[in-house]
Amino acid sequence: MNCKNVVRELSNYLDDALDQGLKQSLEVHLEHCEDCHLLVDTTKKTIQIFCNSEPLPLSEDVRTRLHDALLKRLRRPKD
Amino acid sequence: MEPARAKSIDTQASPVDNESVLVAAARAGDISAFEALVTRYERKIFRLAQHITQNTEDAQDVAQEAFLKAFEHLAEFQGNSRFYTWLVRIAVNQALMKLRKRHNKDVSLDEEVKTEDSVMPREIEDWGPSPEERYTQRELAEILARVIGELDPPFRTVFQLRDIDELSTEETAEVLGISVPAVKSRLLRSRLKLRDKLNRYFQRGVPQ
Ligand SMILES: [Zn+2]
Image (tube, rainbow over all chains, first blue to last red; front, side, top):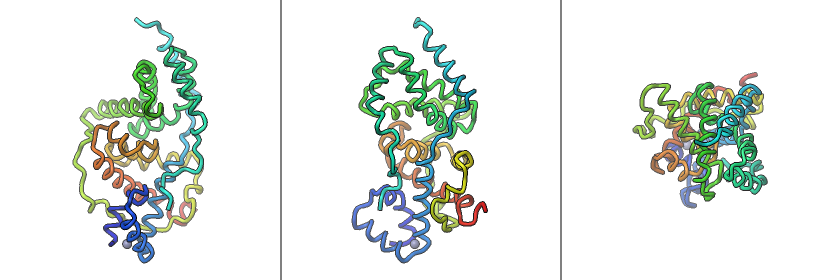
């Protein structure tokens, strides 16, 4: 396993979708390669930061407009 | 190691039963039940629309149209996928339509994906533990919206569905009408590009 293979398998590794043999040789590489170790760590953090980030609340103005518009349309009797 | 997307706490876990009750009531025409569903998901749907369209006004329209469409088509919701996944499917289609209209051209989701050579990471630096904690929630949301907006639509859409809205690879492929290998290769590229872009915010010593 070389650095290029690590990049190619990175997504599969982070999603825990590698078979045991490939996973093992990737992890052996990580033990010896500081760059790949950091690449895996920071890519993992990238995914976690996005995945765990809470969506911001809508401003009161935007929220009111959304709900008013929906109610107006939904209450309208069907043709 | 644990998969990167495993969350410590699933905030949506317990209200699921409640959700199927709401969906059933909304399907029977109960508008207040539908409004409760809107309240539950409006922030996530708005973020999805904002990330894909990169335009606040469009995102508001998309959210509104998506919820309206969802209400009108509730009878077609089979209940064999999560309600949120079904809602995301509607919202992402609305968002892509908006994007095409705004740019007055076809924003193709099938465009040719370049080979790995162009995705080789550039700066590799240590971020330290919990680099996101150096920012407020609002600052972080703005940073994430900015960097995802720098990706081309086919890439940011795949990343949004897989790594933010947590659809499976298969669901993402189905929603976007592309193949599973295409989802995988775009996801890898998106993750690497976003990692590169976030490096300037999260490497040790930034922003202090
Ligand atoms: Zn390496």
